[in-house]
Length: 87
Image (tube, rainbow, N blue to C red; front, side):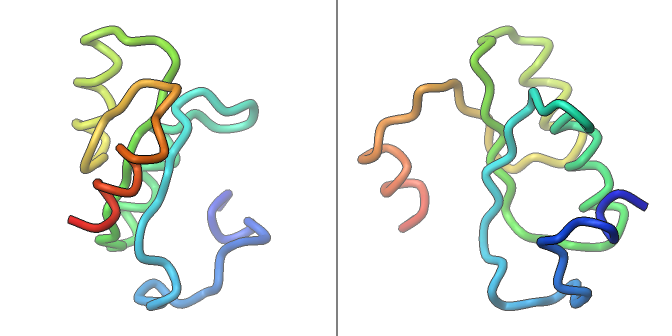
């Protein structure tokens, strides 16, 4: 399982140190939608913001269907990110 082999996985699905995920939808080994689905399949209910450079409606729908909480296009402005994180 890719998530379990990740060097960032703590082994604790309710780890309080993980409060928000910025998920790039275009990653080289595993796509962001697939990674988001795996996170959700493991019962992890952390907010996930899907990020992409391609602003297409199908991509948004796919990310939300995979379990993303938010969908934003890159680049994302610092003030916008700060606003999202402090809501």
